[in-house]
Length: 324
Ligand code: GDP
Image 1 (cartoon, helix red, strand yellow):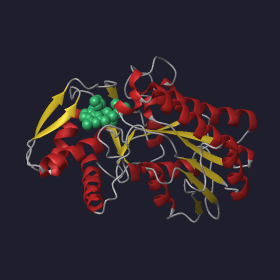
Image 2 (cartoon, protein in one colour):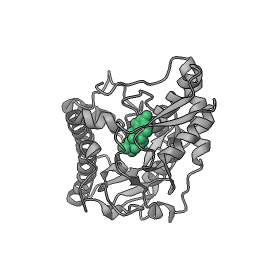
Image 3 (cartoon, protein in one colour):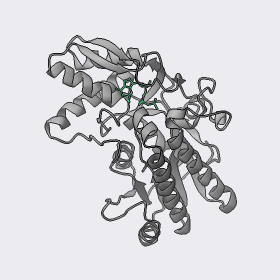
């Protein structure tokens, strides 16, 4: 890691602070000696270029964490291709360019592990980017994210600003979207298992064959890594952020079922897509710094389920439909 950015006394704008990642970054920044800036949607529409420029000029952050994105699971990505591509391109371009225009010195852009080619060799190294075709079910989102990281690289090269990118693996945890169609696999399975147990059903419906492998990272671990990179990393290349371990979807489903309880059988719905067969990031670049996640998968899932239970009772669970 080759740079330091001292957060003390700085103003850090977290774009997307209501999302799962953004809110975890805000929680993590609370233990740094910096001022965190956030903007409610009613105050700032990240899709409005003039508005974002004005807001940024007015507030003058020293650093920006770009955690705002339109995200969704495998079906939502596939069905709402135009929205995923267009919205993400607009939001990230507005934030990155406005940051540059208002002389923001440090910016951290968040990508996703789906930017890598479908058949990249595993674990996926950072330099596998753009070496092969993408997974078709999420290529719209992936293309937008690739454009975002290239935009940071280009501003860095042309103007010498310290804009960096991190590529987190599949994240999960408090604040995730528990909508059954739009959400990712962990919140979807957790909610399905919970509802099956409540209704006395003994089957947990899992999409696809159960054989795909995925790596997961608890969102507070991800936020810790992101703040670490914001402070310690300065380079043109993006950095993978993951746990370094993967698991089959079938094993994951069994783990979720055992946490939720109720002795459930797993049933596979093979009319639903599997997506990419395996997605494990090579995290040696990040781990070489000594950084490690604190939560093992089971512990993170237990925390997430405890949060789900607390919040479902309070009516605070996010159930964002694919089209919204
Ligand atoms: P991906 O990593 O981009 O493929 O996104 P997802 O988290 O949506 O899906 C990961 C894997 O979990 C895929 O193989 C899905 O088919 C599988 N899966 C199994 N059950 C579910 C479910 O209920 N919802 C979702 N989203 N995926 C599921």
